[in-house]
Amino acid sequence: MVEEALFGMGILSVQSRHGFLTDIDGWKRSLTANIVVTTVCNKRCPNCCYAGIVRDGNPRHLSPERIADEVRLVGDVAIVYLLGGEITMHPEFERLLTLARSARGRGKLMISTNGFRLREFEKQLWRIDGSMVTTSDRDHVDCGGGPRPCYRIRSTVGVREGRVYPCCVACGISDAPSTELSDGWERRVLEVEAPCERCVFGT
Ligand code: SF4
Ligand code: SF4
Image (tube, rainbow, N blue to C red; front, side, top):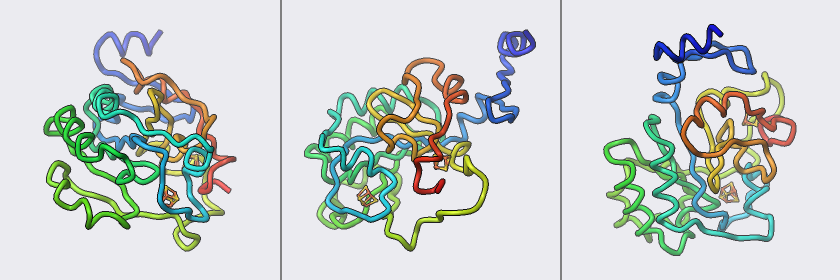
């Protein structure tokens, strides 16, 4: 009842499953959203946190049009990262950047890449605001200790094939709980459990 009244007044505050009071509009504007555009990768890192989709025997690329739709539906988050797998393995890398840029408008648009093919594509990168170069070899994984869910659950969401996941890693676990990427996703995703027990950062 109180929540309904607050929503009605536009204050947009809820208590999530994890016990935090959240200003949803403000929270959404501070979020990073990772959108998976391909499950294909040219590496095989031992602690790949997206192994559940990169090694499922079903390699797939999202069409640039669908990627642009997902960028639009994610809306006014702080940063959108496009990633894989390895994003430069997408056969329409240039076109996907063009359409995603246009869908994102002035909002920050970045890519996450393992960097091994970046020189080849450097002339395409003017369309984005930056890139993060990352891999998951053993030295870089902070397994063990610390609270679970970890800090990622509040600072990031993952998007894969029309679904939103409660952190940037959950979308790399094939059957993790998720909610539909459609109007109101930012409220619904607060109630989705993170699959910490199956995550390389949660074991
Ligand atoms: S960590 Fe990144 S670069 Fe390594 S296998 Fe996974 S998706 Fe590929
Ligand atoms: S699934 Fe992994 S990355 Fe996500 S909140 Fe849990 S421990 Fe953190």
